[in-house]
Image (cartoon, rainbow, N blue to C red; front, side):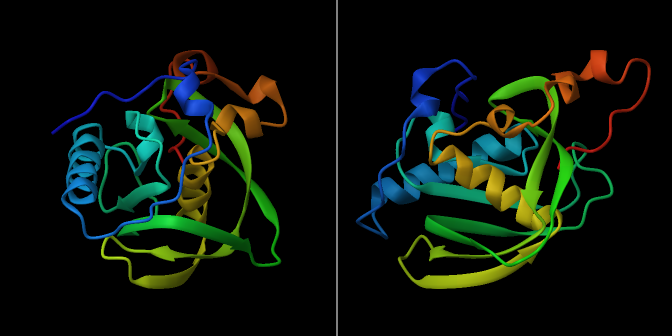
Length: 177
């Protein structure tokens, strides 16, 4: 089922999400199905449970070919529950981000360019991966939602934040990261 995505300003987006304690349940399966439907319907690269009003530490992400993200590398379809992120000593780089909870806007956001993330899948099995580039950016963006952080809170220079049509008048905006 496609769910409504909460918009910036909704206090639920600022709350810290609770850890998932039970896996492989009907409720968790239904939540993940709704998140997948919602993300696909909106051509998103990822979605966090708090964005649809569920205060649990659950994110999904994945990018194949997507009109919102032309030219970015693919990101594997992933369910990441109770994530832990560890930056691998690397540079931070700025990239343009957008968000389903901040529609019509973009901002230049600094993120670690390489990291290790760990968590559990929908059945509770632990896993970890190393990610870099766009993949690392997506993980950081989605996991920020679990701590009540929206990407505009990370922007260093607010002159690089605004409505897409105002930032890039008459031109194709750069792909969201």
